[in-house]
Image (tube, rainbow, N blue to C red):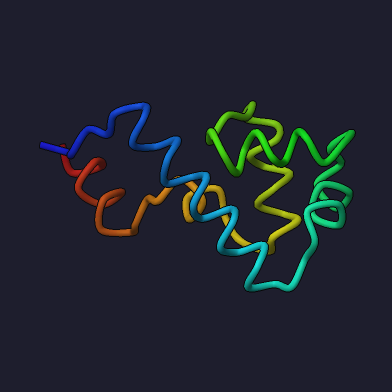
Amino acid sequence: MARRFSEPELRKGLAARVRALRHERGLSGRECAKRAGMKDRYSLYSVEQKGACSLETLVALAAALETTTDYLLGLTLEQLEVAHAV
């Protein structure tokens, strides 16, 4: 059976991966928020601290950070294969 993730666990991981990728890409909070079409730096801060965002924001952040939503959510290919096999 596929592993289930708790919402707090997903949010914590999302926040950490967004922060890490932003730093890895050398983007300021303002630049990352601008690339993602966010109205202000506080919106990005909310994602980076709480992992709180809409699906639309998740997709925009993935594009701004040149990654996938799966990566930001912490999903691996193996987890997805297991989920489809069930």
